[in-house]
Length: 396
Image 1: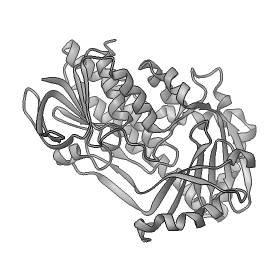
Image 2 (image 1 turned 30 degrees about the horizontal axis):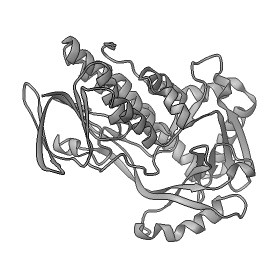
Image 3 (image 1 turned 90 degrees about the vertical axis):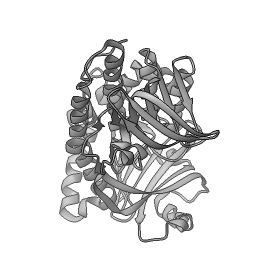
Image 4 (image 1 turned 30 degrees about the vertical axis):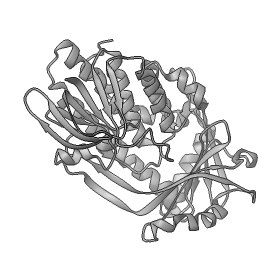
């Protein structure tokens, strides 16, 4: 019998697994895909989550693969006004005054490599969960594996299997909220944006051509995420990509698209992140449009508060009512802070705040980010407000 089964092999799943394994918990991670997925999803780790990654012992590895970043810029597409600001305003105030840029698959790969050093941790790919039942002593998880049906038993289960979570469905928990009428298209491409004076995080403000353009790695790979009408055929989105790029890319040079993925955006969360011996974390518990990177940030803060609590329950015999506190606190942070702010971010970047006077008033405040360090510091400190402490202390 395992102590914890984790369903889902993204950053939330693998970091929970690593934290639990380091504490001595017997953990098994199940992922339906044949390996860690390299799709154009989250890639920015805000400064506020780096302490938690460091506590897991993998920040140096992440820095070797990704890179530190402080520079930002808002670009008003119609006027070409650029508003630069920097996280250097955090220097002397926080431990890590920079963001980390790196594909989320890379963080999962780093954590998986560290898990290989723990005999109490197992990772199983190509394993699709099909059933889940729980009783007073534990949870039985049924799955389809390459060799046929399998059944595993654990004291607790973490559902970290994304917004289309099978675990959440098996728990019969609704995913309350709304789906946006637009479609996002996330693309990874090689293009020399810095040649044209772009910061490594550019937020292009426009009611038609809004986009977020950010550097992913030191090999010249960038992410360009733009929006299109969801009524357009999804299967032909690549045919429309050159036209979108013609309006978004500075200059007129050739580019190379490495990956591209269309997806729907949501503002949703489960009514509770705990049901019996099963908890939901990351996108399985809550989903937001990605403007501002608050989805990954919320999932990481879920993790940093969850694995110490579960470890204390399993290793020290603490009562598991702490999981109710964890659920309530994490849901409150998402519903009342992260999701509303992501909506505001989307409205500003992709809808130009509605244009007119509303846009100009917003720009007046944003221009202060360049010349007023206190204003920039207050803006940068926002992501720290998404954090909650573990209801139970760490065991290691």
